[in-house]
Length: 133
Ligand code: CMX
Image: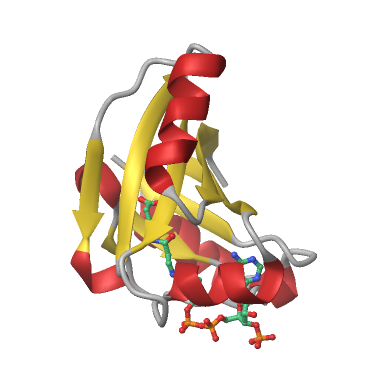
């Protein structure tokens, strides 16, 4: 198992513009722009912090997964992403250990990454993501 670092922390927000203002203007983080990931119905805003990033996630559709998450649990930390160098091999090992996977094969993530989610029933309720760049 080779988890290299925390790649990013994903935070679900209801209003991206006001959240960007808070992280950029009040916390003073560097705002690196946004990306829309249509397939996952989400707009992502990036703020590097040291070797990691904060990714703010706003749903592009109330019925998208982040929209549903906010209706159910409110805004807040949505997922924790670990950087890995070989995502297929990590998924295989985790599966062999009995960890439940949401994604058996990687999908497209922000910034051209390949990502895969583990099922929160295996992680103590935290949505854990593996991320290969
Ligand atoms: N935290 C904790 N539990 C969560 C969760 C979260 N953020 N999101 C979903 N779950 C739980 C659900 O409640 C569900 O639990 P049960 O099986 O007990 O009912 C389970 O995880 C599976 O969720 P689902 O919505 O039924 O399953 P899907 O396969 O339809 O979707 C997921 C799962 C995680 C992909 C989707 O909910 C999601 O969050 N998609 C958006 C992903 C995202 O953030 N994309 C941007 C990525 C940017 C990047 O990181 O690069």
